[in-house]
Length: 274
Image 1 (cartoon, rainbow, N blue to C red):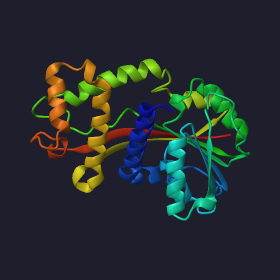
Image 2: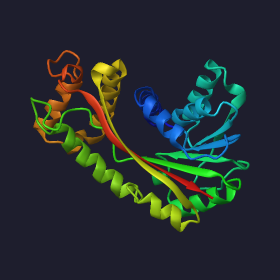
Image 3: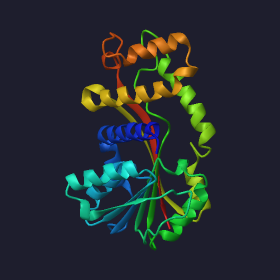
């Protein structure tokens, strides 16, 4: 792996850790909502990242073992370190795998959790059929997707360059839609078309003000830094200058000094039974 690729993975891992810290209450809420008939003994977290879902599932189902599957060795290493720190090593198995390639042996789970992962798969219908075949009779699949990357500034912010964040997101959204053709899919219909019975659907609106959590500011700063690196070449000179001010700790327009700073996004969860 190149130095640049390692830096990208490390940066993405930081964002995932902050996502877990800021949105932990919402993750736990979705896990508690899942329509499981009996507590699962074996859970698979597909596309686990650094463990946001894994640790929410371990907390909700204290008798369960979780197999965390991800393509990133660094993310899985972070997850394993966290599991060790929490004394959960004996309940977590990590498996590095590309879901577009040959699947490893994963056993027969009672619950499969796929959060923000299916839209990355080239052929999600094929992946869902594999999940269907893996699940124990009566098993449940949970699919969770964000409506898009979280927003942090008010719609009319920042005052020194209104609408800057939305223009940055317009660029990243266009690129993501070109690269990820299943982004924003109607997963309820996809699940029904791959042999599942839809057991529930839930939409959550997330709006967490910076005053509620110090982590919101760190999450906003790191996210805007990452977006800024990605979109700088396509921004106008005025927008680039305004973004530099948002990211400059010495500037009066630094992101942590922005009024109305918050994490705003929407998340939808689908539960489906075999």
